[in-house]
Amino acid sequence: MKLLTKTTVYFLLIMLPIFAGGAFYLFGKFSKEIKHETDEELVNDKLQWLRYLDTAGINSPIFTLSTLEFNLTPTDLPVQSRHKLSGVTLYQETEDSESPFRQLSQVISIHGKNYQMVLRKSMIEKDDLIKNVIQVMLFAFSGLLFFVLLSNWFISKKIWKPFYSSLDKIQRLQLNKLEAVTFEHTDTHEFNQLNAALNNMTNRVHTDYTNMKELTEDAAHEMQTPLAIAQSKLELLLQDDTLSEEQLKAILLSYDELQRLSRLNHNLLLLAKIENQQYPVTEQPDLHTMVEKYLLLFEELIREKQLTIQKEMVDTAPWPLHPALTDIMVSNLLGNAIKYNYLHGTINIRLTTNSFSISNTSQIHEIPADMLFQRFKKQSNGYTNSNGLGLAIIKKIADSYQLTLTYGYENGWHTFTMNTGL
Image 1 (cartoon, rainbow, N blue to C red):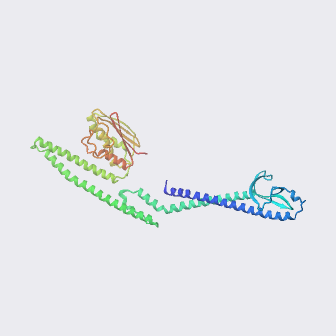
Image 2 (cartoon, helix red, strand yellow):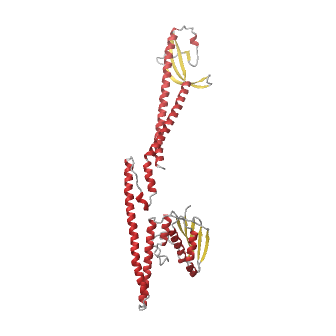
């Protein structure tokens, strides 16, 4: 849930009970006032009727009058010093329904006789008035609540705008473009503190990135020269006819290890460049063309092992990769499929616009999951003459370009699959 939505929901959860409580309180207060005013009217009517009855003759028709609003009935009950007020519901012919009334009743004495006097006032019009008032209150409260929520939403959105701007910049950060990122000054102290911390952090990260990049490139470059000199010297020694067989074997072993060290240096530099995002996507190379190219380059190795190549590929498959990394990905996957295959083995290649997989037969068992894409972990389990960086490089390529790389093993078949996720 977004922060703005969350604060609005919390505000709504707080305000709804308050508004509901206020509405019930006002409703109760208004109803009480209506009832109080009606009771005062009944008391005033009682006083007027008492004055009138004191002057009326015993044979006055008033003593036989009986209506919903007034009723005077002879009774044997003792005279009451105080009247009694209550709410009753009676049938009202004009409304053709049961209607609420406020009733005043009291036993009084007139000309020496006791009478039960009952005065009533209909509450139906007052109930209608209360309903109208409630509707107006609900409309007013709803409008007020909507206005408050809308105002709170707009105010919160404006206040949090610098935060979301900084967040958007953080999400779009690229290591090679950190120097161009600046978090602006705002009129909110807390956001200024946050942006200042982010500016300091990005500056430190960019400095560390630049230093690491320069160190990696310089180290790789400086290592290549002595490696090349050592290899050339060993090549000259291998051509010396005066050396013994044991000396030649020692020199050849040293030469092979130097070559391995050179490949290791190159691969580590490549990994560092991929991690530093130094291979932006400037074009989309055709993976079909790339596969055909390396099948042709590896033709001699394929013929040597007498491998069967089975292809199921679309005519064109442009992928969102740097051309150099596409070369590395295809050559590594296809090279491994050839290298670790056996005589008369099979390689299956499947290519679609968003999926690329290479399956190969092999006598080597399944690669353990904890070693699959780890660096320097391929010397065991039959994987010899390898620096253990091939699959690590492919995995790094996949991660850097939001591709999905999976591995499967079934019945002697090793399968690596790359998906674009589109």
